[in-house]
Amino acid sequence: MILLNVILGALAVLSAASAFWQFAAARKFPLHRRIADPAFSPSISILKPIKGCDDTTAESLRTWFRQEYTGSVQLLFGAAQADDPACEVVRNLIQDYPGADAQLAVCAESLGANAKVSTLIQLEKSARHDLILVADADVRVPRDFFANLAAPLRRPEVALVHCFYRLANPVTLAMQWEAIAVNADFWSQVLQSQTLKPIDFAMGAAILVRRKSLDGIGGFQSLANCLADDYQIGNRIVRNGGKTALCPVVVECWDRPMGWRDSWMHQLRWARTIRACQPLPYFFSILSNPTLWPLLWLGAALAGTRTCCMPLAAIALLIIRVALAQDLQRRFAEGRRAVAPAWLVPIKDLLQFAIWTAAFCGNTIEWRGRKMRLGRDGNLEPV
Image 1 (cartoon, rainbow, N blue to C red):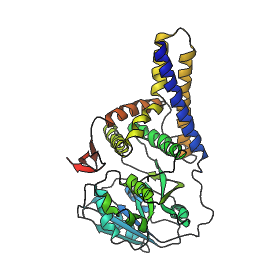
Image 2 (spheres, rainbow, N blue to C red):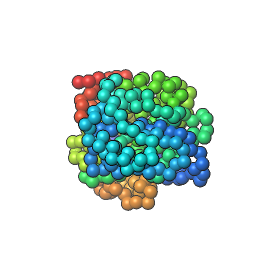
Image 3 (cartoon, helix red, strand yellow):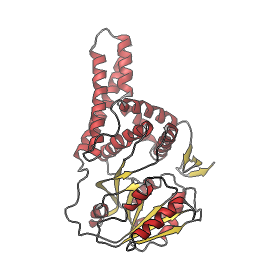
Image 4 (cartoon, rainbow, N blue to C red):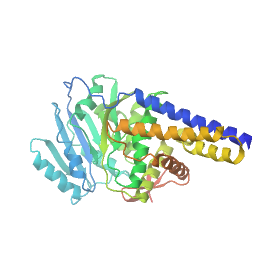
């Protein structure tokens, strides 16, 4: 029992140290900082695959028409079917903004297992500019987003710019669980990893890439069967000698209300994606779970010790975890209240352990209403 207490205590301290490291890396990053001079304004072609809509879709897409940007902007929307309800939303927006260089295309060809990439391949044929911005339909951006996202491209060695994204409308308890994973943990973990090595992947809410760099990795065609197309764009560009840059402006992701099943499947797809892209780091990520190990240590200490030191230490680590997570959420929301309650933080960590376990127990995912099998190479196969 003493040995077990020592092992669990060491793991609890290790997970707490990782949480502090993560927190420190996040605090050093200039989150939300804007550029001082927006004069740099290269021309941009924006590719936005769309599928389906809800009450938030129109406002999310509208933010892309409202940009305060002096450069030329081409907006290309693509849907697989002409009768997709999102098409009517886009048509109305094009009418509302007659001065915008925007068009809607029906991308009916299926060019791979990844339907989003299939649409991107077809949209790129109409793109006129040398900078390509790929963005999801549910993303809302501030008015100065284009200027801030393009700024790192002043440096010729930068091939790709990406940014963090915030889950903005966690209207259900299940979505609040996801909000902790995104708004507290994910962005700070990315910055933690950046202290060890440069970021060698891209985050997919909004990616700005030089066309020549995209062509250098085989274009969107090379990603037609990849699940993690955003990760692969960044990773392949870095392996091809390009550099990525992280824009400090945070965009917002707005989604339809989701229950526990949808949130679980979403998190499981994400976990299996990371496992396929970075199997060894993902396997060892369990060591940094900042609730699991202190809780196990607490249980072992209560069962096997007559002193109160170890239980109190374990409880202190759990309190610290909650405090750090809440601070990260508030910082990420740019002055707004934390969107998820404090009591949900340890529950999120325990559910994350279940997700981590499930990630190694199968290769099937649900994505965009389809069941797919994830191959060992990270490619998708229809079930």
